[in-house]
Length: 296
Ligand code: ADP
Image 1 (cartoon, protein in one colour):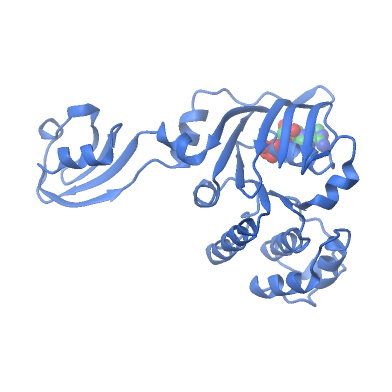
Image 2 (cartoon, rainbow, N blue to C red; image 1 turned 90 degrees about the vertical axis):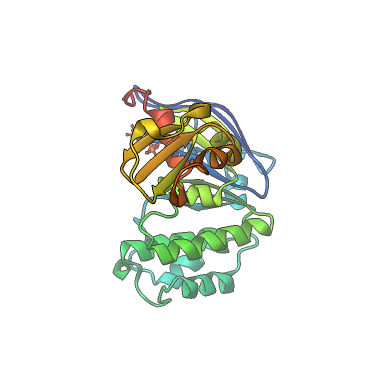
């Protein structure tokens, strides 16, 4: 649905994108992750024609985005990170204005999204809180009904309940066949939502792939509580188990199947075991810990 090849972009002497290539499959939720300054927003802006890449190929829903930016804008619902909106408009007016350009937009759906997200239709945009403005931006990107949604930090400034609602909305839209490409710093939300993730570093793709595949390379971790205190040298270490902790509270890292680990642990006086296992946060730390700071 989105096909990018060797996208490069510099601002003056600052090179931001150094040849980004990725594919977003139709009907999927694809996460775009990386530290501040990695170039995520710039790449998303290239997708929607707000920024023009210096070179590379970009195809969205079968349209050459570099040649036909207007056609691409009709096929993409964009939720930018910025909230500098038209402050004098009412929320519902802004929604109407933002989606009007899209051929299949649905204002009634937009209004019901504002209701779901607790936004008073007639409140002036300037009088909305930051989180409420973010919700209006998300509502328009959904209600435009474009086949592709590109969202820059959609979970930013949302409270946990709003995140839950928005995550469910995203899943529903993708079940209907829409495609969502989103950047996020919320790696737990990314892991819950996304089937694919691309990690960006200094304007280049560092890792890319299905979440399950990416996580399969990250060792698992269990939190183990014992009924009686033990010291490190009496804990089992077969198969490369690694222990941290003391007394009755331990964390065990492993690189084997969960079944094999539980066999090893069964000899211990266990009070409880909690899955503390591999997640995108761990992978993020592992991927970026040996990378140097972004260049300017
Ligand atoms: P991210 O979204 O990953 O935090 P950005 O794409 O916002 O990263 O920014 C990447 C780099 O590009 C940063 O160093 C930023 O200062 C620079 N940059 C972004 N937009 C501009 C611009 N309009 N002019 C000059 N530099 C910019």
